[in-house]
Image (cartoon, rainbow, N blue to C red; front, top):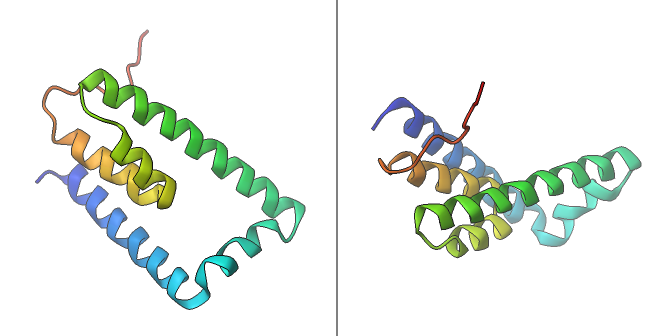
Length: 106
């Protein structure tokens, strides 16, 4: 396993542990309360939602282009966004037929 995959696995484990701990301690209802307490919190929530939507669009198109079903990843990203994105990247890095994630044209 190369360094990129190790970093993705470690990040996924940390995010999963934090998510489980937050849900265990506070429950789902308390999870959303801090994001709407102030205007700046609402702005951060809106920004993160926009980034999630962009990631969902990218995963959908990238998976379709690679000939795999994007729906398991979309469902996972809808429930646990960080885990879903990292899972997709982990599996994508192991695919030798996958092109570059960013195609920089000059």
